[in-house]
Image (cartoon, rainbow over all chains, first blue to last red; front, side):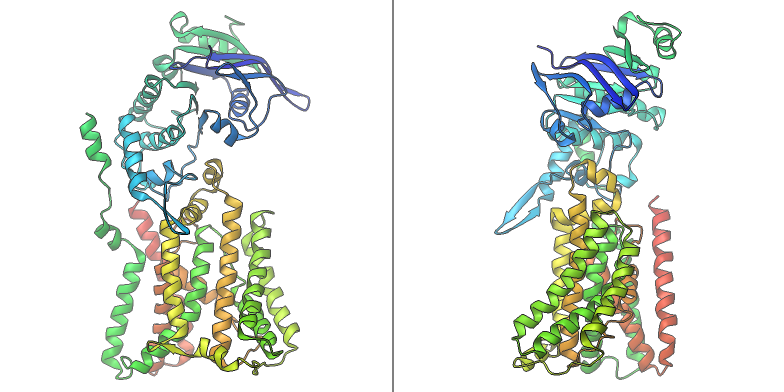
Length: 246
Length: 330
């Protein structure tokens, strides 16, 4: 049984055809690289997978069932988590508070419920340890490095025990050393049986962690290959259109 | 490897002591103590029980407003209407009492009026996404005008059958402290707990820190925004009832200029107008500092017209201080 599959997904905005019959599939513990130039339709595809808006046509299958996402919350409930490009972190809160934002651990005293900081720090620390990231739950996110911030955003997705994590350009704006850290985080997710879809512009990153690569051009998937059977040169050609399909 | 990580994850960069030394309310408290000590040397009236009583009562009104204001400012908003809302709520409460209703009906009238103003502010700002500056500036004009219309420009000084109880609430004492000050103390503690230990409190900071992120992670951003304006309105209502009771009369000019003093208290207490930081103790101590400066100038025989200059200096100093702190923490 396939974990996650897009079948003939199309999307148009008025007269503009953003996606045309896109097919994607991914299994548990797999990392899929999604590549394409600006305007190729990657963001539209992500937003459909994350439940931001529905496709105009086609089907989404999750664990052998056809699903429809009403909104991002719904998608999250069904097991699809997103790490946004800007990470969606609050700099003025601690790492643990960010991990639990919107679903704080609470402790009740009669009619009042209070935040259970001890539980939040403990849980967040456990998630960071699992990700092998030296991130301190009690520190403000403001003071953290790009890699640590990424770890906070990824730890947040772990709370709901998702089947699939979508990562939008996680290595776009961080230093070389931190890129290695983030790629390690992706490998940890994979090792725990989570399917990761990595949207990236950076060829070396995709070739370092992905099992599969799908290339999009002008709203269509023009190639879907195991990473071992392709090369950066071929993928570049596919992205730019120098190579039609593969 | 994993042992090492657990060692790291149990640490924190700022210990409690370090956190205290870089916090603005701490330094404002130090400034307050220094001023008090100097004044104690200069004036033999400063440390008397009477002066303490007067100072604490006088600043309680602004302090209560500053608590609500702080919640609003943390979400990156502003509430310019609090002074006018104090005016209209005070008039509403006084008129209901004057018509012969019980003290509880009168208090309810005052609080409901203030909540209605907060509701209008909050709905327009949270759900129609209008600028808080403009919406509350509008309410600033509307509420003051309604106070004038309702009162027909008369002073109200008869409060019906429960007059004694009503004036006792605002003008009386408990354990030797003025009632408004007791209420300020209680509310400060409630706000401290709410800010720090409830999900609502964390959401208020999250909305001010990164509204977009808060929305994406499922924080009910619109409801949080609505709640802070309701709360600020409610604080205006409480202030109005205490103020009318203490003064024994309601006039429609009541609360004029209070919005700026409440904002000044919040800012001096370390609340950042850019949103995301600040706290209840800061509002409490910021309001105290302003009143102590005023009181000190008075006792030192300085012309009372200098008050604004000193308060203004402290506001700018406070913002400078927070800027330097911001530079240090990157």
